[in-house]
Amino acid sequence: MSFDDWALALHVLSAFAWVAGIVLFWVLIVAVRKSDTPEGTIRTEPVVRVGNAAVGIGMVGTIVFGIWLAFSVGGYDIWDGWIIAALVLWAISAPLGQRTGAAYMQGMNKAKELQAAGQTGPSGELLDLNRTSSGVLFHALWSVVVLLILIDMIWKPGA
Amino acid sequence: MLAALRPDSWDFPLFLHVLGAMVLVGGLLAGASALAFARGDVRSLRIGYWSLLAVSLPGWVLMRIGAEWIYSREGWDDLPEGVDDPAWLAIGATIGDLGGLILLVALVLGGVGVRRLRQERGAGLLKATLILSLVLLAAYVVAVWAMAGKPD
Image (cartoon, rainbow over all chains, first blue to last red; front, side, top):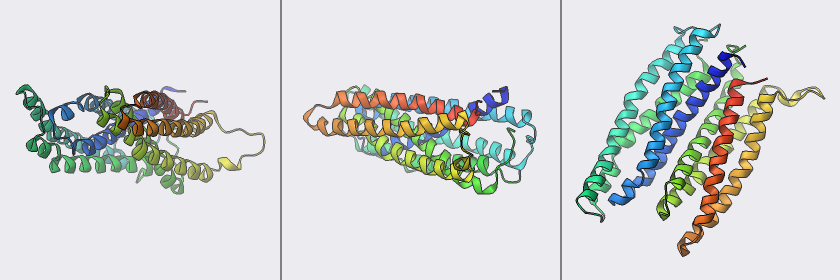
């Protein structure tokens, strides 16, 4: 395998890590909708960390190896329309992911606050925060943008 | 070679194959994480199991349908006698099929485990499901590497 073959393999593996992280967060979004206790909410924190790591490694890996490939592989150029589209979509996806995280961290922070205050029972306010509609919206938009990147990478419009 | 363009008719089957594989890996990551960090919590164990059943299994089916479709479109089912599939394809196909079997075993064990949780049993079976999920995750990393990097 050449260095470019390795770069392509790592680029695709990074994309898998990124999407796997997004899928993991969908599972958590569904799971916390029924979580109204501090303990139940805080229990998801290690899984959130796994998702954050997958998304972080995936986003960095796709952009680093993707740009490398755009410069290194003959026949592709960084200014090709489909590559520019992917870069723009990647840039759009980053704040969407951050906003999803911020929306759901409100529930996590509230759970920690309640636990520190010794309130371990069900909380309506915590349930409302865990059912954040803006969080679902941002995550759905994030997922659509990543899906568009995948479509762009496979169809390579204009190439 | 790396930049070689595919015929347009290959794109949709490839998209289904890759999307299915990504959903499969995502469900495995979510399921394995929830099971690994459950520490006996029944709700987390159920979330882990349902992630495998409701996310990974449909992902595997989509991946496998896309695989068969693209395999046929690319003409791999039409090779002359005595000519084998390339190594990357053999690795991906073997791991894909064997992985499906292991996923089914993990789901059966986990399903029994989840049912037994009502009698405060079944944690051992769900631990076996976790181990199989981790094995599958590692195997699919190898499969993705082989299918993307196409080693000789």
